[in-house]
Image 1 (cartoon, rainbow, N blue to C red):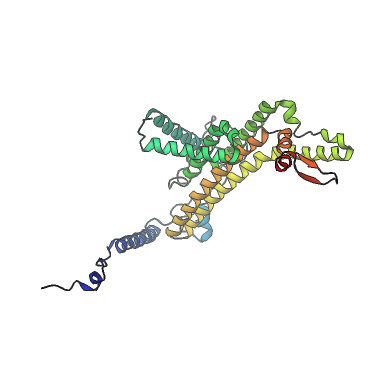
Image 2: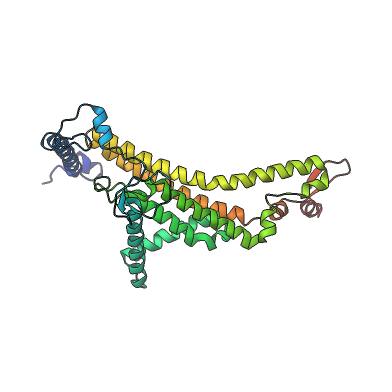
Length: 347
């Protein structure tokens, strides 16, 4: 006596199994979490209602009060002053006071140094998680630098990696919840004084590297070009004019570097704060993810430009000219392929 195996087994196919309820359970947990966030956001509005800046207990009168409550002005807050008196600082200026951006910058530097010191003391043949993470970060940055600048870029990788990691974690520090709530803490790169200082370090570095490689006369010869006068006065005048424009552009580089980084980080923090004040918590969470990605991109752009500026600075015009292939003229005066390829083709 036999039993009917069913249509699936009769056809030689395995019997269908019931789908696991994991996907539906995960979806229900996500929906429950979203509902809890919305409920918490609404409860916080009534239990701890927002108030205008500097006037706790008073009700807000409009959207303007919400925006001003989350608007952080560019001038940094003074944490410590030699005179012991709190005073306002200009957006850009020189002062010996310790600001909240300077204090946070020291904390970021200390945290990075601590991580790398611990990772250096824990080097093993079978790496752990920390060693794997540090080695992955270094190898990724090294491959990126070499792919852009070639083998000559290897000597600049330590500074390139230092700029990237410092700027990245300085950017990400401003996304922490308590930043902006505590006056002593603020993202360093949201202060134009910090970004301008970083850009000046880049400016000094690539100019020093250019002078070391080419010599002072050879480096200045990239901008004050007099060889064109051998081919006529008009040609020499054009070369000299173009060289002087390139010299002026060298002094524009630190301004563009600093303002690009400052504008993106400061503007992102202001936008995130305003959207947080005007909407429920779900939209700011999405903005937070986009802002973290933008912060990563800005750190990569700044450090990559530092690397490319340095590589350009150590190249002379003679090297660029020698990189071009030598062409041969045919009897009719037309330019043909290189002599080597012509001779190889004739064989």
